Length: 52
Image 1: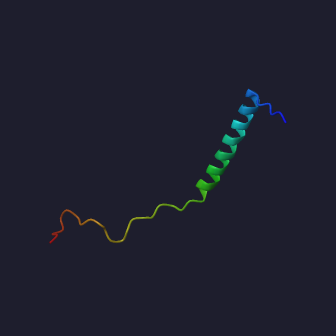
Image 2 (image 1 turned 135 degrees about the horizontal axis):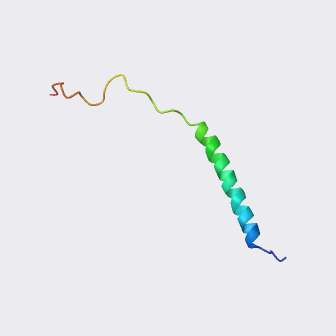
Image 3 (image 1 turned 30 degrees about the vertical axis):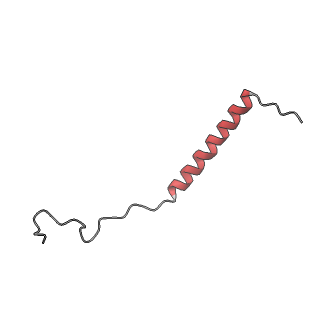
């Protein structure tokens, strides 16, 4: 069996791979969780607070 691989075929294959990767990336990116809001208690003490 002889496989003929032309430049045109490679370009079409690359185009469809990019298209599928783009669609998959957009669909996965939309289902991500949002960033958390501000915490209720600060992690770092304010500059006016006396830390001992």
